[in-house]
Structures are given as structure tokens and as C-alpha cells.
Image (cartoon, rainbow, N blue to C red; front, side, top):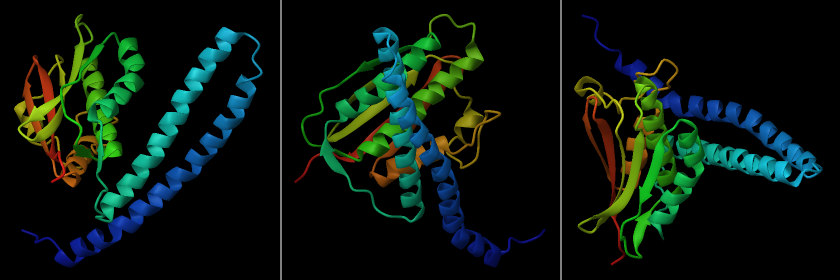
Length: 242
């Protein structure tokens, strides 16, 4: 049996952050160009005479701009995690952060004939979390549920339910769907980097979800029964200041 080369592993571990930084740089260049052309497009939209059409186009442009900014923030967060920098948690309204994601993704869910619902819980005023991480985690989990329904195209009643609440002194948010569920074999590996059951998946989504949750001092719980749906619960760390 060939033993792993520990020196080679150390080289890979040392070189990965610079390689990742280079990749982020290569992504940011076209992203900046897209943003520039979007700004030009917005000026052209202002010249559209039909007010109803102009309003619709402006709405779509706002969504594109929001996603560009979110992607740029995600790249920054990715670099920060590679460098093992601690996140700056804030006191805020978790329900507001969740609701913003729901409003962003609801049109896509509706287009796929999926009912995306949110039930905010009572959280108090001292929820401590990293807003960008929470939003990125939610986007990952909700889009995973949306994509899971592709395996159940004939299913008539498609639902994704998001809720927030408290477990003792800790706040949580949960994403539950009634899709095809996750097999025990896949559940055992879903947080592995680069593991994916999708043909075009990167396998990084749930790995980053786990990483971001850990950075906030939280925990990820998964519950699923094949053909009965899946449930992901993110329990945050300490919610109040002493």
C-alpha cells in the first residue's frame, strides 16, 4: 500500500489559499464588467416610454444588481474563511434577514410551482449572528430544496417551509420541504467538500453552510426520510449579551 505523502499534503494545504485567492480574482474581473454593463443598461431602461414595461425592467435590473453584490460578498466571505479570520457577529433582527431572502427567492419558487412560506418566531431583541452568512446559508438551503423537486417533477403539491424560533437561549432557523428526501448514504456525505449528487453541482454548497454555521458558533442538524422530504435546522450560538 502506498502511504500518503505528508509533505505533499502540507504543500497543498499551504498553496490552496493563494490558489483560491487567484480564482476569486479571476471571477471578480468579469463580475465587475457585468456590473458596469448593468449600469449602462439601467440608463437605457430609463428611456423606455412605456411606464409599465419600464417598471418591470427596473425590477429585474434591481434583482440582478442585488445578486451581483451578494456574489461579491460571498467571494469576500470565502476568502475570509480560507484565511481563518473570525467573523464579526452583530445584534440584529434574524426574522428580517430571513424575510429578505424569502422575498428574493419567492419568484423563482413560484415559477417552479413551489409554495415558499415563512413563519417568523418570537426571538427577542438580542439575536447575535452574521447577517451575510445567514443569508448565504438560507439561499443555499432553499435553492437545494428547489432543485430537489426536479427529481419529483410529477409531484403536484410542492412546499418549502421556513421558520425561526428559540431552543432554550439559542435562536434557530429551519428549512423544510416535502420533496424526495435524502437517502442515508447521501446524508452521511452531504457536508463533504466537492461531494454532489447533481451532474453540474460543485459540491461546495452544504460544505460552506456547515463552515459558516461553525464560524457563528452554531450547529447544523439534518433530518430526512426518503420520499417524505428533508429538514435542515441551523441553531445559532449565544443569542444575548451578558
